[in-house]
Length: 88
Image (tube, rainbow, N blue to C red; front, side, top):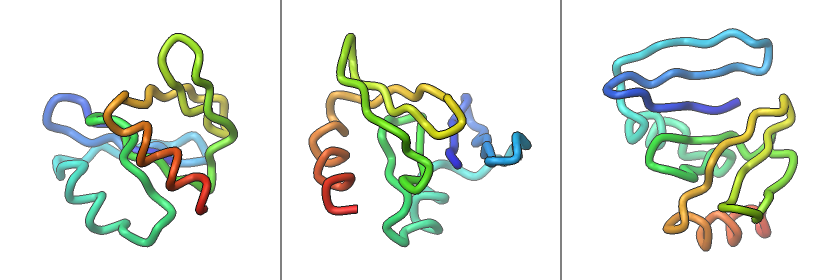
């Protein structure tokens, strides 16, 4: 569903509610999951676009996932993210 970077650990959150803690970087996961379904929306977040419900652009952009999670989208990543979701 999505990945979150906390200090030097990546936490993967799955749609069944489970999570997995790993010491690999988000960049590693970004390279492993380079199939078009994942996008790095923030320096600390990599999401699966298949589980994106909506994008809110109020008070800073937020990606709302199908499980209700609200994930910040950085200003630097927003233009590429908009382009990606329009073509996805």
